[in-house]
Length: 115
Ligand code: DGP
Image 1 (cartoon, rainbow, N blue to C red):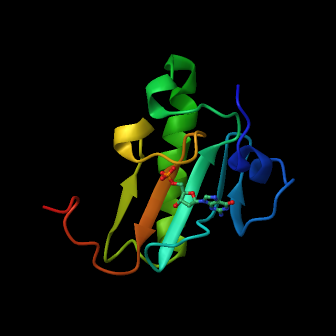
Image 2 (cartoon, rainbow, N blue to C red):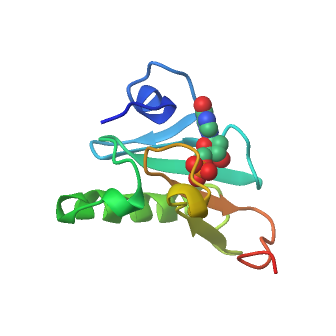
């Protein structure tokens, strides 16, 4: 399994603005925020992409989404709304090959994709 910068953040070897960690997932602020709230939620055990997940990853995937919902509430973006994104591989625009969920909000995000 290839190690990435996100694995190093999970293990505390590289600094990040960590905002949540439990036995399954870690959440930290994106270094290049695209919105006032831009948080990344990653599994502690790296899976490269969404296309690589298996049945054994289901508890972690569920936790990632619940943590996103809880962090949206903590960042006061839940009432106005927000967006969750998982980019997968080349056509999905994935840059870091350690599965991650983007939590974006704090401003109107517009259409999902440019026309
Ligand atoms: P994606 O395109 O879905 O693979 O998004 C990768 C995101 O990761 C991108 O928005 C920038 C962010 N990122 C890349 N390197 C770092 C880092 O070292 N620290 C933090 N906090 N975020 C990073």
